[in-house]
Structures are given as structure tokens and as C-alpha cells.
Amino acid sequence: MKLFHKIFLCFVLLFGTAFQAAGYLLVNYAYGNAIGQEKKYAFQEFQQNKYILQSILYLKPELFEGGADSLPNMAGRFTVPVALFDEDGVCIFSNIDVQPEFFDFYGAEDNRIAFRIFREGEESYIFVYDCIAQGDVKVCLVTETDISSVVDAQKGMIAYFQKIYIAILCISSPVIFLLTKVLTGSVKKVGKAARRIAKGNYSERISTAGKDEISELASDFNQMAQQIEEKIAELSDMAKQKEDFAANFAHELKTPLTSVIGYADMLYRRELPKEEVKSAAEYILSEGMRLESLSLKLMDLFVLDKQDFLPERMSVKEMFENLEQGIEPVCRKHGVALHMDIEDGIIEADYDLFKTMVLNLVDNAVKADCRDVWISGMQGSNTYQIRIKDNGKGIPPKELGRITEAFYMVDKSRSRKQHGAGLGMALVSKIVKIHRAEMKIESDGKMGTTISIEFPLHEGGKFGNKFPND
Image (cartoon, rainbow, N blue to C red):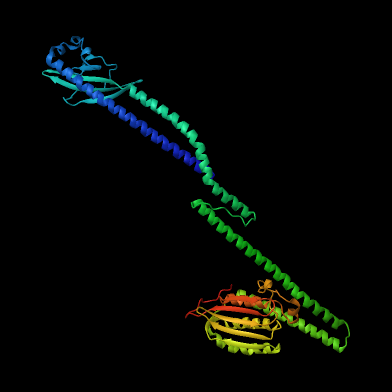
């Protein structure tokens, strides 16, 4: 059963039951008040006729000595229908409409008035009875009060209420239907939106007017849809990156291998002059070195994804003093002047990864046809910043968001000539994440590039037993 039907039936049943119970209580209350008034009137009539009977017993006790035959004109003396019984329970006079058999006069005492409500067919009565003694004469008096009109009035009220109940139920059912539709409308919107999202429309959202639970549900649904959309976009990007990685990897392998195979085949099949043999071997050597660089960097990328690294407390100044021996030959080879200004600070780092990161950044800088490379380190309040700046060709601003992708190269022809494969910045990006650092790349595409990396300062304890892989 759908939620709409459940709510509708619950409302109808609840309203119907509540209205029926209220009507039942109201009719019974009115009937009880009416019966109470009739009882009060019956007792008053009984008391009045009791006084009349006492007067007769006092003035003319001989009337009751002759039995029922001696009471021919007794009816005119009383104000309501009555019945008189002797002390043996034998009726000596009666002008009441019915003769019930439930009167129990045996053992009855004076001033102990009893009453009974009696129904026979369509008629209803209140009987009040008591025994009166005067001298040696004892007579039991029964008075009859007709309450059929009260019972008929109750029946009329019940019938009238049932008509009102049916009419109100017929009127309220469409109103309840509309209210239920309004209440479940927002839930249906959520369901429809969920189905549209399931079909691939991840930008689906629901309007969230109001502050009730349904609005909160819609708001939570929108947040969920936003997270799903972002996750799907992230997965799509990852899938595209993997496809690009495979395509670029195949392309990077195909070009040098084709050249190597071609030159090797030429050397194998033909007799060439010494200079041509040397030139072909040089080309094979160059492409082989590029393939070696590619394989080593790919291996580094795979290792970074699979291996856990244990950080150590290290002085940044001491690390760069050791790294300077590896950085200077690279700069000197390309005719680049190195400028270093490192302020001391303690960070948690893996030295080999840190070295790989710095050397790749310096290598990218000197390959950009720069004249100077500046490396600086400065300690802040909570972080330690390392900045590597060059005055080379720079990176176009539109390319900045992609340079950390594997195999992505701003200038492909220049990178291949220098045995580059477009993996250096991808390695740097992973190493930065492993150290929980943040990297920022700035360039106007005309004059140089600045790369800033902020490491969290050591606070007296390690920030984890192992660095995360991502």
C-alpha cells in the first residue's frame, strides 16, 4: 500500500472514530440528563402520592380491611398511575399500564424507596415503590412514570446524529484527500527526482520551501544529489585520466620504439658509412635513454600508489645542504645560476621522496630555458614554505590546471628532445599529497614560474604512523 493511501485511510478512520465517539458521548450525556430529570420527577410524584396514601390510611384504614373489592374509587385519589399491594405481596389495586413482576416487598422497611426502569416493547417506565405502615395496616405503594418520550427522543437524536455523521464524512473525505495529496506531494517530488537521477540526470534538484520535515528531507536529498554529482564527475575525470594515461603511454612508447626499430633494422640490413652508423646509434641511445627515464618514472608512480612511507623529523636546512650537491650539477649543465636561501625548520618527511620532488622541480625549471633558479625556505606560524622560482618561458595560465596530469607536456617537442615524458609534475603532486602539504603554481606564461609548497610544521609528535597514499 502506498504512503498516500495509508495517510488517507488513517485520517478517515481517525476522524470517523473520533466524531462517532464524540457523538456517542454527547447523546448519552443528553439522555442521562433527561433520565435524571425524569427520576427526580418520579420521586417527587411518589412522595406526593405517598402522602396521599398515608392520609387515606390514617383517616380511613377500614378501606384496606376488605381487600381489593373495597377500593373501587381509589384511582381518582392519586395523581399518577399506582399499584397497591398488601403485606403478602398481593395486588389490591392497580391502574398502571403494565404489571412487572420484579417488585420485592418482602423484608422491605419504611423510608427505603426503590425504583426500577422497565421497558416493554416501545414503552418505557420508571417504577418507584415503598411500603407504608399505619397502625396494623401495611400497604406497598408503586407509582408509574412514563418515560417513553425520553427514550424516543434519544433514538431520534441517534438517528439524526448518524445522518449528520454520514454527511460530514462525505464532505470531509475530499478535504482529507486534498490534504493528503498536499502532504505527500513533496515526497512524490523526491521520488521522481530520485528516478531521474537514477536515469543519469545528476543535476536534478528539489525546491525546498518551508521549514518542516519534508523540506528538511528535500534539503538532505539535494545535498545527497550534489555529492553524487560531484562523485560522478570525479569518477568520470578519473576514468578519462586513465584513458588518457593509457593512450599517452602507448603513444610515448610507440614513437621511440618505431625509431629504434627503424634504425636498428637499417643497421642490420645495410652497410653504412661510419658516420651514419654513429648517427643511428646515437639516436637509438637517445631514445633508449628516454624509454629508461619513462620506465623509471612510471615505476616511481606505481610505488607511490602502493607503498606506505614512514615520516621522520628532519631539518629542512640540512636536507637542502645535502641536496645542493645534486642540484648544482644539473644547473651547471644547463648554464643556470642557482640561488638558495633556506631558513631552518623541522618538518616530518621522507628524505628520498623529498629529494625526488625537489630534483624534479629544479629539472623542470632548467629545461624551461631559464637563466636563474631561486630556492627559498621560510617558516611561518603553522607551516614551512618552500618556493622554487625561475625566469624561463613560463606556463600559459590555461595550462596550469593540467600540468600535474601524467604525460601532460606544455611543449612536447622540447620535452622529448630533453628525454622528458610528462611524468615529473605528476610525481611531484603525489609526493606533496603524501606529505599532507599544499602546492600552488603561479605563472603568467611569459616570464618564469613560481611553485610554492607548504608543509605542516612538526608539533612534537608525528601526524600519523604512516603517511597516506593519497
